[in-house]
Image 1 (cartoon, rainbow, N blue to C red):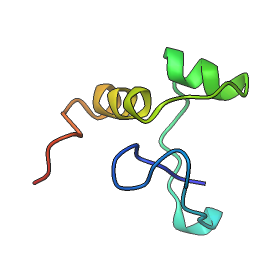
Image 2 (image 1 turned 135 degrees about the horizontal axis):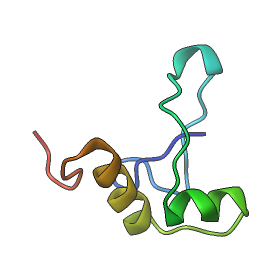
Image 3 (image 1 turned 180 degrees about the horizontal axis):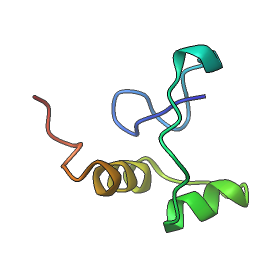
Image 4 (image 1 turned 90 degrees about the vertical axis):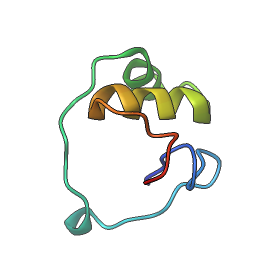
Length: 62
């Protein structure tokens, strides 16, 4: 299941097959720890983690 916190919310992640998804590596931030421990995460936490990982701001389109 995939979500980005903006277009695809945490409440309604997109189902994807493994062959269509590329593994980017394991995260070590607080959101990754929450996911591993099955805690709920918010859309804003997810957007911030994606922005930190990609080195840019995911809130802006373009």
